[in-house]
Length: 617
Image 1 (cartoon, one colour):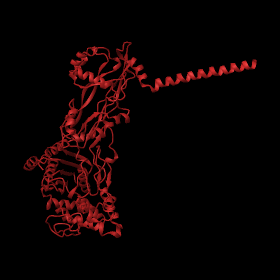
Image 2: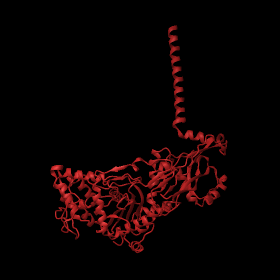
Image 3: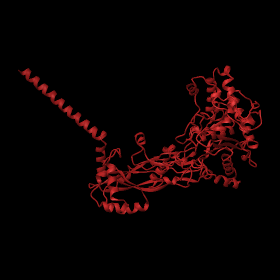
Image 4: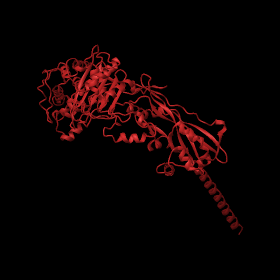
């Protein structure tokens, strides 16, 4: 009996110990949930005693290469609220003070509480009620702020622009996206970030670091001052300033010349890869994205059939046309298909095109490489591609093998790949793989099937930036530096990619013949309008066949012939022959660069009076 009693007591002891342990575990789990997992509990506890007020840093400002201020900050004020702290107040007086309607007030309050529209909403954390009050509007509101419990004013910076130019290069800031909120803990829903252009590419450098001000509340929730005299506050760190390679005067002049035209102008300093001008037309004033009408203005631009929000310099993909011929010549020289003295005949066209016979204009025949570049002979480069793909089976084994060698050399020249410019949304153009033609022709194809590629047509596509980069590569006689917009960053070095030479797959000695051919094009050939006093300009025209309408007008150039300072591309949609409009625009841009002002005012007037839009083609 005594043994049985001891057993019962022992069992009860274990039950009691087990119950105590379970209670402790339950309390521990609950405390962990409340203090670590449940943010609302933490927010409630903290908001009863403190108001954590975010301080926004000054965003880095942006200058051009000559220290002209392009983008700067302006203070604006947001009306914030903490929902749980709102007490009954005169909403009509509130609406009159902010110059809003009662309907807007009711709608906005519902939107703030809607977790689908406002993810992460909490009644204990600050929410944006209304953005971008001016200093005067904020002052009027703050005089009455004591009447509106739960509301306060938050100071923030917005962007302003010193010039009405280069909007697609500079970009704009806008409300953070859902992806940014998920991927970067820096942001909260009411934040802004760079959405396009330099603002986006250099967002983490420009944005700086936020600060925080901890304010103490009393039992009634009223602000009593800084908590512990501000020793726990965190100061803001301003964003770093940028200096761009862009010359805003050159940029503005290019945009002026491109009014009523679609296309692009890009100018690169070959020695550094710095982009001095990058025009995309049509364009718009970046100040349209400042202020309360920003959303309406964006909506109008986004439905404009001329698509001014598209940066044609890096996003548009065009057949490069005859501006591609210098690249063809380089590949043929490298692969010993030709020498600079190699002669081909031209009888107003190439006779062996399976997919159409590329025609040509009247000029001397036969002719060598330099004369072919000067006269922009189609036949010469078609024969070169024919000899590489069809007459070198011993060297390459198959047409596919020859084509892949050709393609890889083109890629080394910057075609068919993203160059890596420090702007978002760069296109890579297109240099198809041999598999593309295997699929198209069931592996039975030869040069005649793709002969249009020899003259920059067919399936070849390139961006104006890539075309200009070829001009810079020839200017450098065999290398390029990745084109870039930013010249320097306050207190930091540029990424090594923007300071390192990129060698092509072409031996440097072959570039001399190409440069000479481009010089002859200016002296005796299709680019004679680029012939300038006391300046040795090298150029190449391009008339780009367009199945959708009038041909595109294009040209590339660099100058001087020795120790080049600048390379340029002009590409104008539906502009006709390369010499019709692209060459005059290129001439004016070179005059502006070298002389400060255009010398040929009659040429400027002719260009400005030339209207080329989809409505008159």
